[in-house]
Each structure stands twice: as structure tokens, then as C-alpha cells.
Amino acid sequence: MRMRGRLVIFCGIPGSGKTTVAKVTAQKLPNAVHVQTDAVRGMLSHPNFGGDESEFVYDGCMAVAGQALRRGYTVLLDGTFMREEYRTKAKDQLGKYSSRIDVVYVACGLEAALKRNSSRKASIPPEKVRSIWERFEEPKRAIRVDSARLRPSQAAARIVGALF
Image (tube, rainbow, N blue to C red):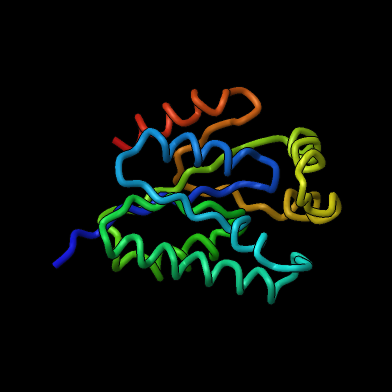
């Protein structure tokens, strides 16, 4: 029987720095896989950031994460996960393949997120970022890093220290 992997869910508003912090964190961990909703959404010819599309994107990421966890990888699952119910769904779906599940909340103010988002090649419409920011539910129990106050390497070091 294969060893179960460890799941680390990265959540935060678009432009908060989740992907950057998750990439740096993955580099500090042995046997890590960084699964990104942005990578799956980037496969779409004309993303609309709607509900059906998001469901497809998250389902694809969960499938990849499940395969990696079954093979013993540490999975850094990187997505907005804006509501507690979405994080719970990921935990419920992937928990049977995980030796442990942690949540990392990459916090960021709206203005910084909008600025970062506008510099992306595939930016999200600003009104969508604002809407997510207004409705985002901060996780109750999470490793919290503020990307406006910490460099990615500092945030990653803090996360790795909290994980181990």
C-alpha cells in the first residue's frame, strides 16, 4: 500500500500572492506538487470566471491532487476557496488520501490585490476581484501570512515552520 500524502490548501483573494507563496513553499518541501486553479483555467480558450467554469476548474484540480496524494506527494492546492464550504468540500474529497490537511490563508488588502491582478497577463476583471474580496470568508483555523508585509520567501519560511 502506498503512503498517503499531505494536503495544504492555499486560499485568498485573487492577486493576494497565493501562487507566488505556494511556489516558493513547494521549493522548500521534498516531494511536493503545486496544483493551481489558475493553471487549469489557463487551459480554457476564453475564461469567463463563472460558476460552471469554476466548478470544472476546481474538479480538475481535485482530481490531480487526489492522484498526487495517493502517491505520497505533499500537495499544495492553490485556489481562491473563498467560502468555508469550498474548503470543507476539498477536505472531505481529499481527506481519505491525506495523512494531514492544513489550510494557509494568504491575506492581502484589496488595493494591493487589484494592482497585482492588473499586471497579470490573464487578469481577472477588477469587479470580480472586488466581489470576491467583499464575500471572502477568512478561514477559522489556518496558517495566516500577510503578503503585503512579508516577502514570498519569508511567508514560505513561516508556512514551512508551522507545517513542521
